[in-house]
Amino acid sequence: MPATRLRNALSLWTTRTVLRAHSLFGDPLAQVISPSSAVPLVDAYRRVRLAGPMARSRLGAWATARYSVVSQLLRDPRFGVVAFAGDSRGFVPQPRVGGDALVHPINDSFLSLDPPRHTRLRRLVAPWFTPRALRARTDRIEGVVRRRLDALDTSQPVDLMADFATSVPVEVICDLLGVPRPEHERFVAWGQVLATALDGLFELRELDRLHATMVEMEAFFRELTDFRRRNPGDDVVSELVRSSGEDDQVTAHDLLATSELLLVAGFETTVNLIGNGVLALLTHREARERLVADPGLAENAVEEVLRHDSPVQFTARVAKEDLVFHGARLRRGEPVLVLLSGANRDPSVFPDPDRFDVDRANARDHLSFSGGVHYCLGAGLARLEGAVAVRELFTRFPRLELAGRPRPRATKLIHGVRDLPVRCHEPAGAVAPPSAAPA
Ligand code: HEM
Image (cartoon, rainbow, N blue to C red):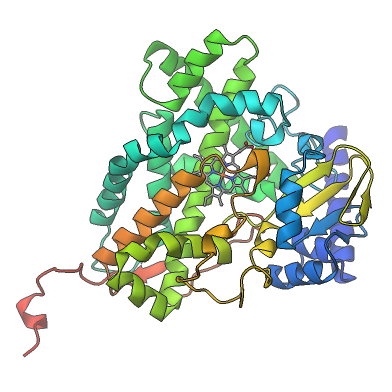
């Protein structure tokens, strides 16, 4: 085994072991991030919240799960993201995958930059996500959802994750980026590798998989960028190519990182919003009946899914200077695990927080899209896709039901299910065959 591989293997083993030990000794931060911890995340969040506004971990980091503290911290310019770039934004040492030459869609994109560079790059793509731009795309999104519903085989159980929750966001984001031939299988595989890597890398084979994925993604986006340079269209990549030509501070590396970020952020998250939403509605009979009777409820139902079962559970920040925050003394460079989903279960803001309630008046106040300068750029798009997807699905198949037990995903930061076996039954308004008609 070459020396670097051996070093990496040793460092990953140490990371796993240290986290496991702290998690076993009850450190709530370790219980959230350790891959071997069996403590349910909501229980770990509760423990962090009860430990105070800022809970100190033995790992040399902090964690917070109180709503007011989380929302304040995300907007405080004394906290940034930069120190995480290059180490998977983690709390533990991580090898730099592929060296500096290879584009990492998270660590090299504006998600991992502080202002002013963050502002400059975010501005390039922001016009595609304004409420006006989204209104102009609504018909296309509804078209994608309806086509996917038409394609479902209603004669037997189907996996709604594969056949609907995944295929809709892939098609929507590819349309936005100007990908001429969406290669669903490849994108899904990339999404899964990157979602796993967001938790941190703990095994050499995960590192190898991430490396191979980054190589493939980069080749794909280089080809797409070249194609759009020669064949510009009405899409984000064409626009990025145009604007990078006019701004010498935007490099080819930035262009690739931004396009890759949009693909990754734009579909793996929304896949799980739709999946978690359908699952919540199938397991809360009354909520489902309310939605079937009043499809206008879809928007608030999606907000409640985001609050109760967010696809993105947490993020991280780092102190940019020595500072005092809510009584905690942080030294420059100390990381904070920001438990967005913990804040969403804070009973001082959301009464009876563990209850899934599609009528919750303040469901939209959740922090699942983060806050401050990194507030999710695609929040409007995700909300729109989620609401159209659940509204159309339950309007078309009001008797939709589970056909098996969905298996949870193994990832922690990204929360969802691997599969969602359902029976659709005949569409609403379909004429029943004579033999099935009531006597
Ligand atoms: C339910 C779906 C989604 C969820 C829960 C979600 C969540 C988040 C969160 C929590 C962040 C901020 C992370 C931080 O503060 O460190 C973020 C950032 C971001 N999201 Fe989303 N997201 C979703 C969908 C989307 C979609 C559909 C797109 C675009 C097509 C998108 C694009 C982005 C981008 C570009 C950023 C980086 C913003 C910045 O750093 O300025 N997201 N998202």
